[in-house]
Image (tube, rainbow, N blue to C red; front, side, top):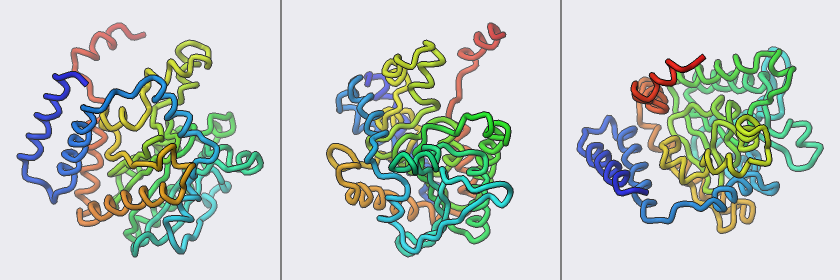
Length: 323
């Protein structure tokens, strides 16, 4: 990282520390993220090979999925099925569970282990019915004051004709709009692939935890390569441009914490990976539980307003030259 970037980060951190904290949550969280970025300044920049290795590990066939973490982290899990309108979508699992003496609402993407389960769960790519099922659980959680925990692990929302005919884009948008209005704590855990609308549909939250070898991006490397070069063989080049690995996502500010994994990846020791993720999740829920609902909602909205802001000078030429 350049010296100017380091100086900029340190200046921001100093200003944050000098501000009176609003119940110690959002600003202290921002300060912690900046400190993590500064800690990584002395570390070598991830190499091209390391970035693609994160993509490979995020997709590893033995990597723990949502239900693997449910089994290890939660008690008394009761799954809820169906959107009460059209169908059940197994690509998205929802339910209520107990986590360290608190009731939580769980929404997670589930890929499936063998070919039969992967086909049934559509490789974790949800249809509109899945997002409607998720919204149904969100409303239950809001009504009873349960925090919501989402697990992101999907190549993206299903792009098939049937999904589009059933309102895929609208379902994703309504899910985000609902999450923006909720007054309960919302936490996302990126445990594998956090790609595209499939991720953000259940990822508009107060805090984002990302496992060390997960990825988080607006599009998959293959999708990006197909659009830019019309050749998915350029996927490695696309991944290097997207920088979807955890270190770059933290530096960019779109996640709040990197959760360490066992050496070699979560698939080599799922129990330890679950313990590390559970500890981070517990700390985060403890921090958010003391913040009033209206304040949570306002901080959440402000969080996403800060993402993707460009200066007028940078956008005006593009607008003038656009078709």
